[in-house]
Length: 115
Image (tube, rainbow, N blue to C red; front, side, top):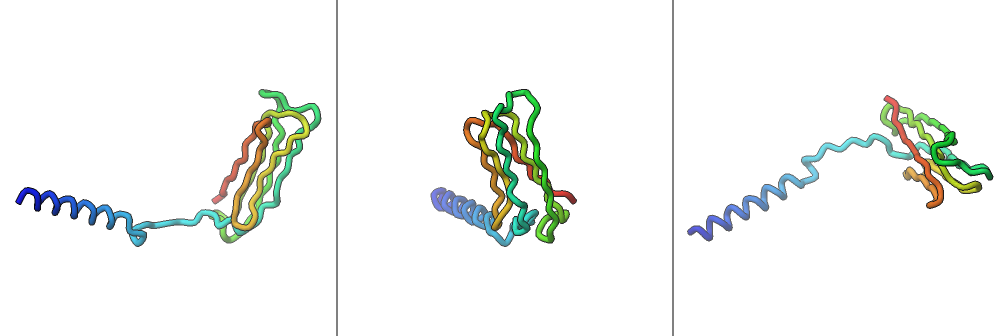
């Protein structure tokens, strides 16, 4: 009888776990479909480079669209350090947000939704 009770409890736990993972119970909000394109921002580090702790190079862009929560997306690309002629980039295209920085450079890409 004790073994049957253990199996019953185990079965109930599995049933409860399955019910909790059911997709019908999830509420999902799409905050940005990334269908509105943000033109690719490209920063080529000048030949002298950017020293760590020096003046960063910053480029900003914004777009508006119906698939964006708050209707506006701001994107900022910042180079904080790196050797000359290295390329950093960021942008939104074909449903994807992408950012690229080579190993020898340091920078950030910020995406902000206004609304």
